[in-house]
Length: 480
Image 1: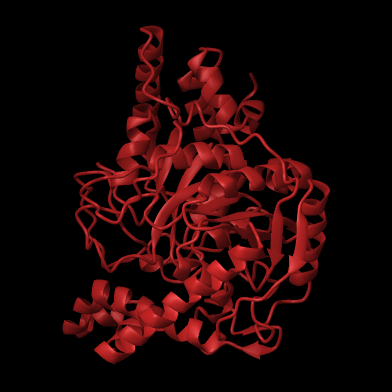
Image 2: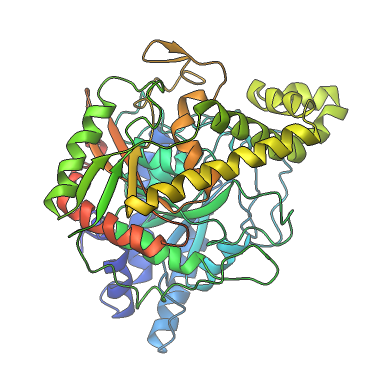
């Protein structure tokens, strides 16, 4: 099979063909490495790539296992590049920072270990901004990752490398992580699928702090909703070392089904969530056009509002994020030389965290609780809610971040991603699906969210919508 045709297959179809020995793991690895060699110098999605000879040898071992009737799992023989915030044994975890150690990780992060156990071959890492801060993937270690559809534009972030690698068919699936849209935003910017699962669905690192770290989580990314669901099934599952991990099991990747349509389902359209939240021209209109696709598959759609003050949501977000970022990176304050090497946005987060106190953190948690309760009220009326994934289209890759949205100046480096924060605070399963393309052919997405632990329901509706919308057929011009 020609390599272009092979790389265009869905991960679900690749897994089936590999298991049936219709496609070899070495064929897939050779095709992926060829695509990376051809396009990665321009787009900079993959970093810390391992030697091709080693990777082809490992792929050959996977083929030999299949010849003996041994299949490790759904990802048997898949090339996988791990987001460079997570550990992959044998590779450095740079986190996009010159301050990170360059020694190879000794062990895998938990979700990486699960993907490796399912048969994936780790080929390298995907690029990320420094310490994952900011929804634009650039750093002083590896440089800028460029948008798959418009190389002069941002890939989003912090899972920008993963999203671009998917869009350019370098990888069949990818792992991402998401605190402030870090998985949803780059998926939207690169016309792929990404899911921030319910809180606890994909357990965090059992060797890290276990209780405060509830804003960020790992999740799946792919080019189809079906592939996204199967990767989530690989990554998820209760782990007793992570006490807040979810006991609600998903079907195995090979048994999982997303059959169904939207008949009779009620969708609440949140629009910009708050009337005063700015959106770049064209984003609301794309979202409203996408609502017609939901209607064509049988959904009932009505506008709705989230009954929580915008300033309460933002106040909770700032303080809880500063608690986590300041807690992780605050030690750099003790060494002025090291602190000066951090990017300004990281310095700002750390400095702001020094002003936190018990009263402000408790108030932030109360506000966060109110955000969750506001969604509960909506789910009394609706099965799902929908909102745009981002407030701006992909912007100039040479910028650090957009300083204004539709003429409204940004007062922080991340204010332009405010629209994702209530879903994070509430811990809801939230899937980025394709909304289409704006002026200049720039991609945009929609956040499709459901009640806590309704991950499969969200994926089923997302699958029906994605099949109907047809936007997945639009490939980057670099593939032509």
